Image 1 (cartoon, rainbow, N blue to C red):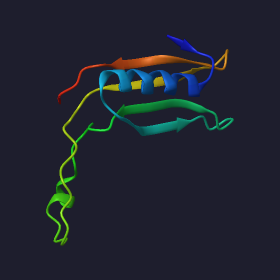
Image 2 (image 1 turned 180 degrees about the horizontal axis):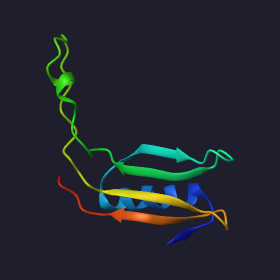
Image 3 (image 1 turned 180 degrees about the vertical axis):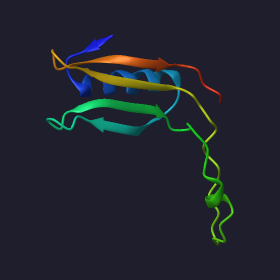
Image 4 (image 1 turned 90 degrees about the vertical axis):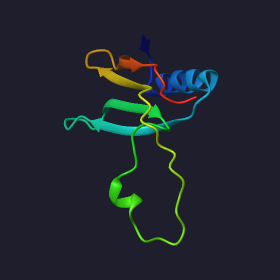
Length: 98
C-alpha cells in the first residue's frame, strides 16, 4: 500500500484500529541524517509490549494497573527515496487481547 504523505498512512492505521476496536500509540521514529526526513515510523497497539520489571517492583504508594499485554498489532511506514511517498513496510494485524 502506498501513501502520498506520512499523515495519510497514520490516518489509515488509526481508522483501522478504531474499526477493529483498539487504540494506537507511536512506538518509534527514525530520520535520515542527510536531510532530516522521517524514513521509518512505527505505530503499535496501545497494549503492545510489557511493563519493565523494575517499574513493577517500585515502592510507590500508588500502583498503576498493568495495561500492556504483549499485543503484536503494528504498522511500519517507510519512505521511498526517489518519490517522497510512504509505503507499508510491515503490517501485523493479530491481537492477543479481547
